[in-house]
View 1 (cartoon, rainbow, N blue to C red):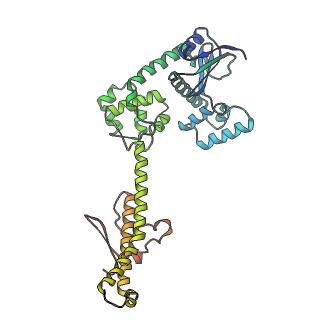
View 2 (view 1 turned 180 degrees about the vertical axis):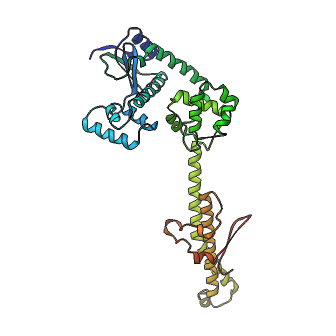
View 3 (view 1 turned 30 degrees about the vertical axis):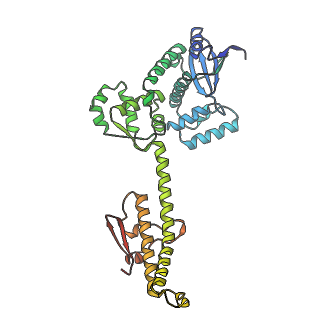
Length: 370
């Protein structure tokens, strides 16, 4: 395979490469390698056929994007990759065999091409090699876009991207809607939208659970348009961000730390109560016989301490359950088993002996002997 053109992106930009391929109506494969990875673009008569990141095997990125966009179940994708590995060929026709309609496959290919080119235009370093060779594909000739037109669209997106780059949300950020789709349609923002259908599609996918990346993938709008719509919806106040991505980790760590603290206190406090009772008994009889001080605690005092400790233990369990459920415990019957097998759940008979109430200071639980 003869190399017709090669060079460095710092000396010969990707825009100039595209112009040369388009003007001379070249057919072949353009490979670009840089610090951010490697991509491959295929051309026919100066038109873009496809563009994709280079993965461990042919069409890996196409299959992955099909799953992320909801076009193909994960199980079907894994079966297709196993069939590809057994046959030792590309993945594409195995995706079709996995019941991915050809029209949908073409839609995913177009999205992957736009995403790859938009990523490539933001590269600042790398080298390229173009090899003139025949290209096999099943795309209709009228669906192919000239390399120069593709480049112009990409450069326009890049200029607009820089204008709202500072407002871009993180891929892991989660948003929720602030109103219904009907209200949005009647609003000034909805009436003035430059992409009404696309905006409504993305707006309806925002559910307070899915990340920005997940919403954009499911919308199949691509990173540029998806992010731009996110920014415009946020500017107009129709969506609001939930807990920041790093906030989820901090909140989870705080919950785990609180749970460990409550478990430790529930384990230590009963023994502390018994020790205080023992010290109190010794303090009441300072001149007593030392051997008498070693006598067992009277049964009534021991039973009282055990009952108080059990009530305190249940109170901590109720607080932990309330924190996990996001609401106060209304009945002792709701309490689960103590964590790590430290104690069984309350039976109906055992729970009935306790008294539970809510006060300003929190949950109040009294022992059976109250």
